[in-house]
Image (cartoon, rainbow, N blue to C red; front, side, top):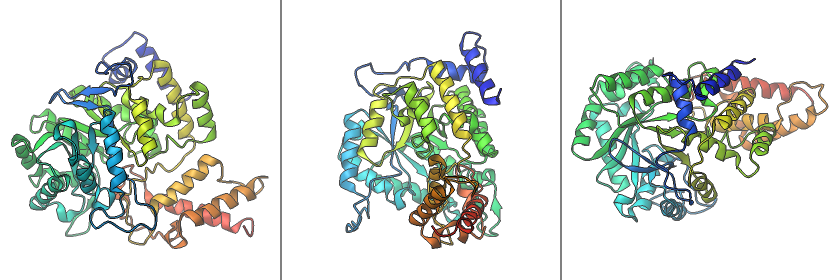
Length: 476
């Protein structure tokens, strides 16, 4: 019996009545009972209450990271570039009309234009009808000094056309970086200290909260778990009070994040630490960058057999929203149909049952066995100094795995067809000069990866596979 199945049986037993104080048990119990803050059963958005402020927050949060673009060939707008502000406005209007009131952005999203586009769209509505979340995204070491980080915060207020931020996050607190003087690679813990603690930035942000310019102060975490532990320690000691925390949570990462990459941490552990402290959780990557919406045929067939009316994505969104300590679940909704589907899933939420939880752990086990590169296309690794399109390389490789187009033996009767699909698709998806063969292993990308992917190693593995396919089988 596999370890994953043992875990499922353990949780099922604990949920069946013999419930102790064990965090894993309490999490499943919470995820299996209806949310106490649901607004009813007539198509109304499920709301959650932030106990720190009393905010009634929509369980679906609008992630403004992947905004709609203008059609190809359109003239660039001098204010919003190639982003389709008219469509952004329409989607924000629809979201607000259907109960979505949490909008999450950052100074670095959408080529640095997300805050501006978000501010334009939201300014058209009464300020008390929505909550703005943005971040101190001082990734570049030139922005680590206190005065430079202060400028970033002030510019966020200007771009968002507001006098205060409802939810301000220290952004990606476990991410690595380089020493600005020596160029030495630094751990996520050390970078966290330099970006937010040692420079006095968080103390200054607390002052801004006291002054009413920030209503809730929290942090998002990826990467070095020691940074997560440090910030929680500071919370426990009373130096800072975190009003919320943003973590990655989905049914694959619940138990498999650490097995996919030993430097990652399972979501059940992250959520458990927040639950113990009564810190509301904001959820990112409920679909793992679309990976849990674009599953292979075997997985899709099982999901459809279980519930023919449910979309593939809705299973992941229901799982992410079920724990009661979750304040909101973020989704980057580029298209109106994505927004409409997600609104329907949470209007109201139907929490996963104990049996559905076990079923999704089985699905996670199937997906884990595919060994895809766990890339979410967040673009934090870009731009590559040597011109590689890293997310596109990983996206094509993963797509071919899901579609069964990664042939392993030239003796297979389907080898030629699969080989052609992989290589032709690769050249169409990624221009030759931006393919994995041009990676020199400089490793400038890896410290910024929220998924802790050893990017150069994965690129070299994919390049070796591509070269093997090109040598075998002759012409395409």
